[in-house]
Length: 315
Image (cartoon, rainbow, N blue to C red):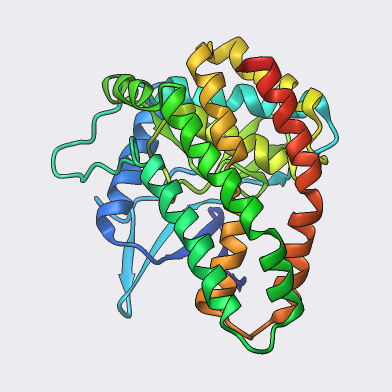
């Protein structure tokens, strides 16, 4: 057996194959929920996922107060961002995952993890973070270039966030949440290039269900589109192709298209950068965070143009 350490995991090579060993930073209750979800998906015919290797009757082991899970190593490659056919294939895979997850009920003793109905509160809290950080930065007598960049753009970002909240309220967010609770469908909540593998047969494999929970499926779709659009300068036509491919299998409702305008608009990516820097690494790695923030700000005009086209199409 050969164990190869990586930054956040280990590759374990044995005579029975290659495996992915990961140290877990959440509790065993969540592991059991994720395991139960994966087995339900397989039962429903959705098998291209990273199922846990069982350690007896449980899907994890404890060693030196740490918790580890193991899955088979899925050999393949990341998807080609410039391949429109491949992007459509990813959208269809996401729709099939959502379809397979419908009706999921956790087994007795497994805690249900849900985020349905919490986005309005979450968005408002993030908007308050924008304002609070603004007040912190304004109090500094000597401001850095990242401080100036933040102050020059924070009002615009806050306004985008508040408008996103209003669109939630206007376009039937809580109505759709009530329907989702009855439907009992899941979201991956991290469906992006880091967690998608195209195997040697050209099939899409979905990995890393750490953030999987009950949520609106259109939130999953919107986040996938954001991940793709960030690297394609917010190309509206390519986003439309993704939506059409998903709709072919998933049958999106009009209300879902409308709500995605809110999800696509909220500047969560810039909030992530700002809170990470100002709350956790204040005055450390200034250049790193300045470059990240600058890159996001420079892409905002493309995003705004994209949002205008999206709203004209669906609102």
